[in-house]
Structures are given as C-alpha cells and as structure tokens.
Length: 498
View 1 (cartoon, rainbow, N blue to C red):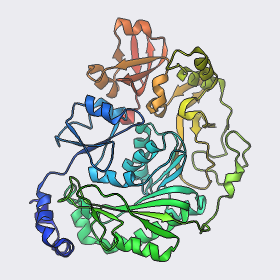
View 2 (view 1 turned 60 degrees about the vertical axis):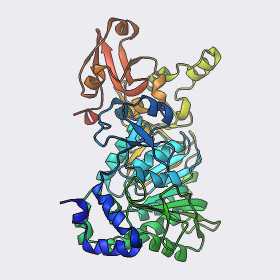
View 3 (view 1 turned 120 degrees about the horizontal axis):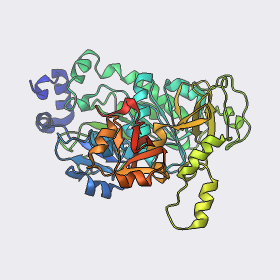
C-alpha cells in the first residue's frame, strides 16, 4: 500500500480545506521518493570544495548556502569517510530551513531547546564560528546522547548539552540567551512521506495532543530570551493548531513579542493568516513539510531575571565559589582544576602548535599558548581523571549536563590519553604527528572498523613513536598509537563502521 493510500481520511479532508485546488498535487507528491540531503560543515571545508570533491551528484538547496540535494537516493552517504570526519551531516532538506532563518552572530549565547538528534544544533554552532556558546538541550537523556555524538563528530567545542525540561532550564539560566531555536515536538504530518510509521501515532493522538505542550515550551523559551533577542519556532506539521495558532497565542500572551517577516524562496508560501511566517509543502518544494516563524523580543524587563550565578565565577580563570548544586559530571566532590593545566596535559596540547605559516615569531607565540586557536579562551577543568576545556561562560548548577565544552582526554598515572572529541576538532589538523590518508585508501575503512594499520616505509620513517592523529584528506578521524612499524587503532569503539 502506498503512503497516499495510508493517509488518514480526516487528514486528507483537512488538507482539502487548507489547500483547495492544490490538494491533488499535494496528494500526488506522496507517490514520489523523499529527498536525500547533506549539509556541509563549513568549519572544516567550504561548500564549494565539498561539492567538487564528493563522489555524489549534488545540487544546492535553495534556502541554505551549505545544503545540497543528493541526486541518487541510494547514494552511500552514511559510509563515506568524510561523513565520519564530520565534513557533512545527513539531513532532510526542509529540515535545514529553521536554522537558516535564525540569524546568528559570532559571540552570542544561543539555545537549541529541542535539539536531538543535532541537525539544527550543528548548523547553529557552525555559525558561531568557535565563539560564544551554544546550549543544546533535549528533555530525553537517551535522545540527547545522539546529540552529544553528532556535536562531537562535527567538531563543536563551544557547546554544552543538557537533558532538562524547559522549565528547569528557565529556572537555572533565567533571561540569558540572545537567540533561541524551538523546533517543537509535533504530530509530524510533514514527515508522513519520509516516515509513514508516524501515521498510526497521528491517528491515535492528533494535533490536539501537541498544542498544549508547544504553548508551554514556547512560553518558557520566551522567558529565557534576552530583550532584543530573536526566537525561531518551527514544526514539521501542516496543522494550523500547531503552527499559526501557537504563534498567535504567544503574541497575545507576550506583548513584548513581534513577528518578523522571513525571506521566502521559490515554492515557499506565507503562513495562513500570519503572512510573516513561512510554510513548505512537498508539492511546492523538493522536501517535506515544514513551518517556521521568527519572533523578536522588544526591550522589556526579563520575566525571570535569575543570573546571580554569573558573578560567582570570574571568567576566565578567576576564583570560583563552592556550588552545592554543581552540574552532574562536573561536581565538586572530585579533584577539579580551573585554569591550571597539568604539565602532562600542557605538553600534549602544545603539540598542536605547529604553525601554518613560515613566521617563526608567530610559531613561538603559539607554542607558549597551550590551547590556541578557537580554544585560546577556554578554561581547563579536571574531574577525576577526565580533562576538559570549557567555554568561558559561567554555567548554573543543578542541571543534568551531558557535556560541557570538550573532553580532551584523561590523565591516568601521569599519562595523558587524548579523547575522540579532541581528534574531531578543526584544530586537530595542526597536530605535529599525523598519518594522512586519502579517502580512496583502503586503510581508511580498516581504521574505521577498528583494525591495526600497517604503514608504508616512508610513513614509518616520518612518524615518531606515540600518539598519531589519523586523518582523511587532512581532516581528523581519530587517534592511533605508533610502535614498531604498526599503528595500534584507538578509534572510539562505539563509532566504528559496522
């Protein structure tokens, strides 16, 4: 049975009222294949270079500069080495719209409130360009684990991942964020073609089950938005009850909000009754269904101005008060250093200081700075054996943090072991001992499967014993340890190619 034949009659009747004479075209779109898309990690490679060198036929997605349609739906995009190096993210093209509509300025504090599995979060952190802070949250800790992995593969450093309710985040952060993205949980009507398993859930619950939750989530998000800030609300559903009605309700309840018109590319249509919003329909664009609205918060006193914790820590490297509600994973019960990097860790980080130019003075300056590049202002913290570099922002206690900054490795009996996260940073290409493999080299796949690698004579002559960064086409994949002509595989077991 085709997807169009499985669509609920109630849904079809409502779409006839919504679309009128376009309904038949809309229903016919369900007989076409869903689009396959990838979004390029511009922190590691330019969109132009990726388009030129990837072996897939690519065509630009009109609403974002670094998104592409993959012309062959069965292309092995999830098995290409560049995917494992974090050079692109596999994402449905319409799902690229919300993050593209939220204007991010480097240095800002950004919240992705319903972030898992990370498609939108990876784009938001890219546009921060290594500065500012992204808080990526999902109420489900299990879903947030996928978020942690995807941000790590992407090479994101200035990020923390939380698994909390919006209410708890608001209580902790207060009026803190410059920009907020709320890609709200919804009935999923816009994804019926891509994932027909959503249809039974829709028949059981319907849009009316989600609207109260969407209103609640959005109300907490408004309270966390600083005056002058922007909030992007989006769903992947066609239901006005979950889209325009939610925005109209927010505008009525929060008079400090106004609706900002967004640019509409070919095929996009205005919202129903709220023309500043945007809708994507699968019969009008190459993609699934989506809705987005951009809200501006005018200057007004914060409804929940609760940032006393910001004064508790001078940033960077100042004194820190004892916090009985310290975040999980960064608790005060174990040894913790702030700003004091152990010699063993500093020595390893200094190996990233290889200059990219011939300016000897600049090279010496970099050698004096243990963390360099985008991590220059980060703060060192150690929890037991775990070593972290944390963005220079105070974070409130009492929240369930799954990640803060970058876990750079572990210090065991005076020996530093680098982490998989550290290998994925764009800065990793500056490590002083690298085995760089071309994507066609069969050893790339062997490495991703966790196998020990044999080296060519010229490679062995160039390497020194100890930690080696394994790269594909100049981009970090993970670590290996070299001895006696072989490279012992240290690629993270949970990420291995199956």
